[in-house]
Length: 120
Image 1 (cartoon, rainbow, N blue to C red):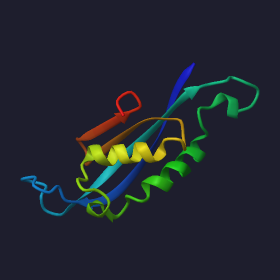
Image 2: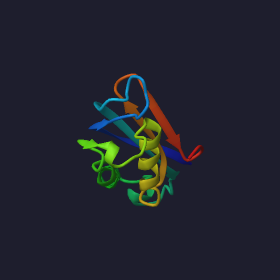
Image 3: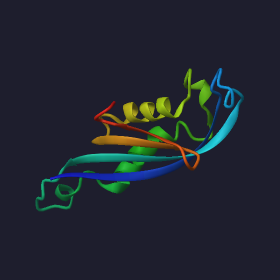
Image 4: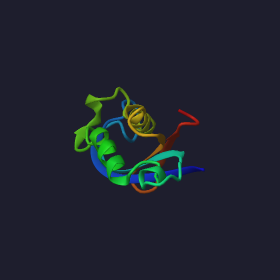
């Protein structure tokens, strides 16, 4: 059976969207990030067989990537640090490290972008 799990993080960052009428000046955000993993459960005789990935292990692996964005001026990492580009960067940097399904990147409270393995 295919199962999906997720872990959540919060970071603060600064960026500038060159040429944008409102966001063309340096400014900051608090972002909420949800990383989802999916996989088949083996339903074997150990707890590892009955998990997609252990939560603490997943959080540790994801944080190693996501912490690079925390309290950072993302203009130094991206030509255009849009939510879409940031979410894709997280997704691409977690491929091969966890059984990644998707990344939801919330910029502030009411705006988000989602990248999944179906559309990446």
